[in-house]
Length: 87
Ligand SMILES: [Zn+2]
Image 1 (cartoon, rainbow, N blue to C red):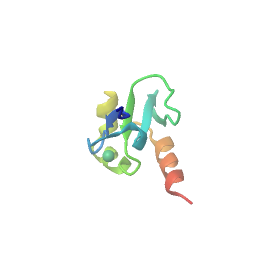
Image 2 (cartoon, helix red, strand yellow; image 1 turned 90 degrees about the vertical axis):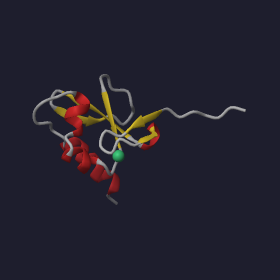
Image 3 (cartoon, rainbow, N blue to C red; image 1 turned 180 degrees about the vertical axis):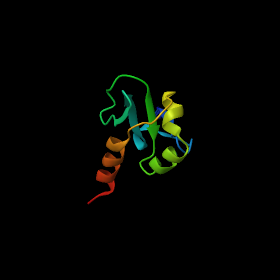
Image 4 (spheres, rainbow, N blue to C red; image 1 turned 135 degrees about the vertical axis):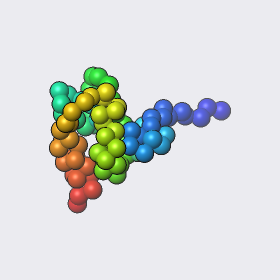
């Protein structure tokens, strides 16, 4: 009777709608993008696929998502993603 609805978010890079559980939430802290692993951090979040970081960088998707002009630090995100794909 009940189908469990999973909220959907769109990836900031490729714009595809996805269950939020399949995306990574990031937030902007100062000029640095952090991964919000527990989905508890305050502020506007930007969601993306774990394999969409490169596209996001090329399209300046983070700048658009956070309405931020200028250079963003995304070392934390790229380290996190490296950890995911690492062994
Ligand atoms: Zn994507």
